[in-house]
Length: 459
Ligand code: MEV
Image 1: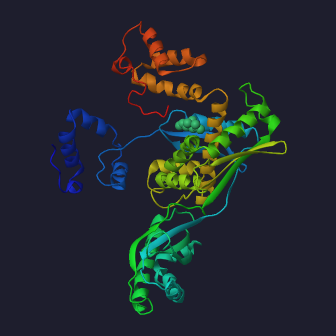
Image 2: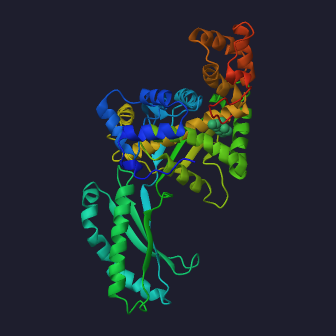
Image 3: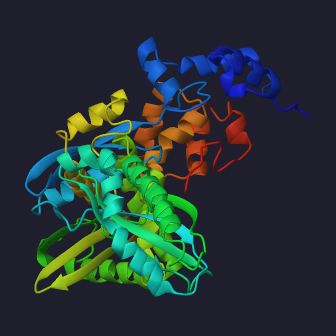
């Protein structure tokens, strides 16, 4: 068994790598060659990456693609997307082109409020007394956090509101200070958490000063933290066109397409197994933009799924309807994003993504990101109800399979050409490759018959 190591984070990068490779890898030399191959050749850029997190030993590359031709509120965008899944950028681009010819996407920010809580326990009996103490001293929360909120207030944001919330029906003695924030162009996590920690201190002081009124029962702060559930930080994006202009090219009639599309959305609205996959497809687009623009995709994910379940059953984030002679398809979801702060001004690729988008503010970024999610879902559902998903997906995945088989560039060109009018599957690709090599020369991956072969795929 490997002995635990003390003080790992204090070691130099080189010492960390040496220890790690000697303990956990078979061939330290080739592992080092691989790891160092991913180091940035500019020292200052590598240093940035080293300092983003603790114990950095190398960088993890992801493809950074771009989906052009997105017309959003009359403005053209090439949307940057960081994602490893083969077909996502292609699907986004396809939807962008489809809707470009039909008026593009319309999007609007509905609200931008974020929330955080001081979770505390007070086991006294007279909740009215607690409320009165809170009301009497409420202004002190604002006053004591003035230093923290000064810059944000200068930018037009700050603390909007603080309330005492009785949660004792959920947990004995459980109350919250619930605060609402406007964080302008920043995602605002650090700002919100700093404010909340200040509110907690202020609340403890107020409680101590009013001990008698509070039945000599202490306020015990459990934690002070923002909520990543931001149902009041909402964005809506939609597309619409005349039903007889759908003309989507797969051979099914316009009305049949619209009916089937709406049916697919209704199924995702009422059936959680389908809804999860449906929303996962939406998040393919959203996460890719969120990552490319240096935002927190874990927060975005958690929030989107909580919102999808807001009615008590997990449901679709997109909706479709017919209004008169028009087909309308829209998404509404909370997106808490920042265009300043975090790594937005540090990571060179993130900076480039913001430049590509014309340095949008947080609200414009919400619009773009919601559109990417809607576009992704449109492409997925369109394929699902017409050709099936595998045709397009496997076509994009073909190069991954060929890379696993260690095909040469020339072989790749020939096999891609061969599959132009055929459905790709792993076994069909192996077969074509085998034929090309004269019926042999299969490597380990192919001969193991793996359908995944080391690349994780959702299909
Ligand atoms: C694959 O990553 C996403 C899809 O499964 C989404 C969907 O089924 O709607 C294609």
